[in-house]
Image (cartoon, rainbow, N blue to C red; front, side, top):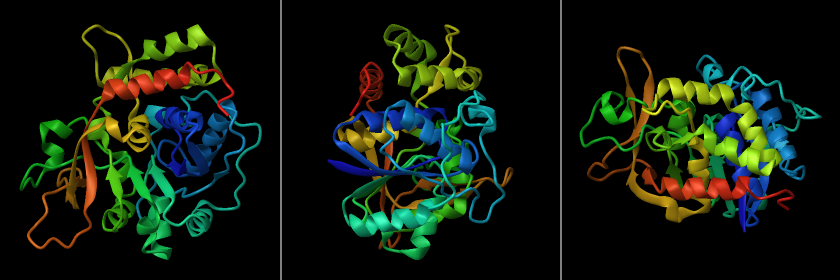
Length: 328
């Protein structure tokens, strides 16, 4: 049994990732923590509550976490996920997530209760995790593992401008850049940490019809929810990554990180690297990338994923969405 804490800025792909966890009989979701990113922090909490309730998982607690970065000005991805994170559908849970108790104190309590047993999954900016690290510097070592959707990926040897490399042109990384200070705190911390960033996740563009057909054939509430909240999301991806056949596509970014946690066999390429910050002098945007270790390296060494069995992940998603409720 995996004990998991999910830290999420609940947008469309986060919703799908939560469903994969909610459906797995070998996963105990100890808590879901919200963070700003795809939408505001309070909406992310309510969206997570709505997804879990739709999946019949009213047993999973949701706590409100960071609603702004450590130092930067707040930014959200409203142009991708909608102002509400759910494609401007206006869907809300029957009861909003209360303001108290807060996410970080609950996280620290759970780590005290289950030392060395928790797999932490960060699907949005790392602000909650960095805040917790400021209180408990050994936090990542007290978790069993930490899996993060973030970083550009593994930079080339001696590369000083990884954001300019053709491999990274579609790999802008809001989970890091929306709070680079938090990401740097996490990147400098020792622990069993895996980064699965957009260099990997945005290779997996799935036809919107894949989800529409499952929802139509099964009528299952989780599948119908994904199709309802993803109309604008698929529109963004289809404009950004136009397909030769004209078909609409959408990203499944966060589901890839969930698959890396639940099914390590889907990871077909990863390297152990320290992480370094790079700044684009034109935009001022800062990025994290895995770099080659130096002689007598003293920086924390984390795992950076660069390839995944995408067909295996998609089959996993299809199996879950075709499974009737209840999942427990």
